[in-house]
Length: 206
Ligand code: GAR
Image 1 (cartoon, rainbow, N blue to C red):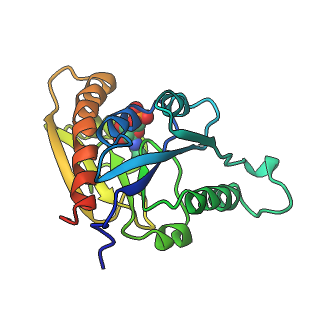
Image 2 (image 1 turned 180 degrees about the vertical axis):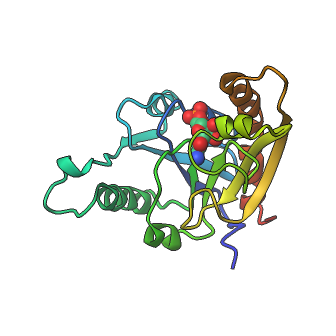
């Protein structure tokens, strides 16, 4: 069953752990006056994430939600993930979020969380999935010696970088490529792919 299209602009949350260049592309594509949907909340598990600054600059609510290591855990929580998901879940509820976009969010959410948001949570990954899931996808591509790589936007399920694919954009792997040059070439495509995939989802075209 599809949750989209909605009869009103969708309320979107982005979760990001780092630099936030995909967040920036999404903020540009879904500003407050976009009738399809707009980003109203950015959550990061890293206090120092540039993504939080970018949200503040765009006048979007930015929340740091800790994902504590086991040694920092309070007695109220069994795991850092449980604590993160409880606080993030509350924020998502308070902001009446319709769609979550993971944009460089470097954590694995629990099967229960993902199940609760099934069909309403997307991720972007810097490879042509199912090739090269997990960390260092660009390095994996170079080590495998493939002639082509790219990025994938997909619905999130309980696996790591699995879940139904919405769209992919391809780039060549060139002789002499380093992890950095390949990552930059893929990133350019990510910034086009993610807004396009979100548009398709919100329009109910997926
Ligand atoms: C992007 O390349 C994204 O695809 C990747 O992290 C980078 C985040 O960049 N995500 C993953 O590897 C998730 N498995 P950004 O913070 O500039 O958007």
